[in-house]
Image 1: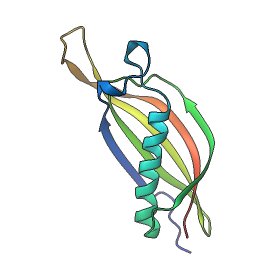
Image 2: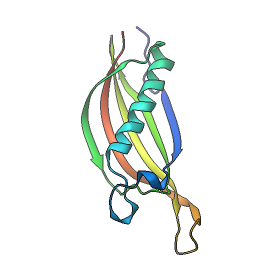
Image 3: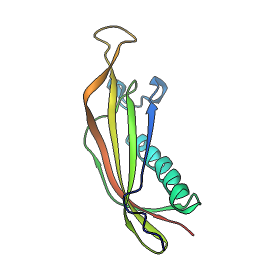
Length: 126
């Protein structure tokens, strides 16, 4: 068994306005979980040469809103390597945000990313 602890994958994505689900251009929490699934898949490919399967979440925390027009980063880091399972910590951060007060297409890079969602999950590989 190879120890993969510390292996990290990050995906960055712009959230289009077509994904707004609630008032104030809010995006539902499932968007974050979908991105966590994507980074977990790449993480399993890198560490084990297989897409793996998501087994469970031990903890999910929605800490700040995610909005249409945001640019977000989803990061997955292996924190424990078992024989067939990997415990993974996930973070979704908002790194850019629309700024409609300055104009319809205005946006800004945030000085400090906003931690929007965190989770711990388990993936299983063959």
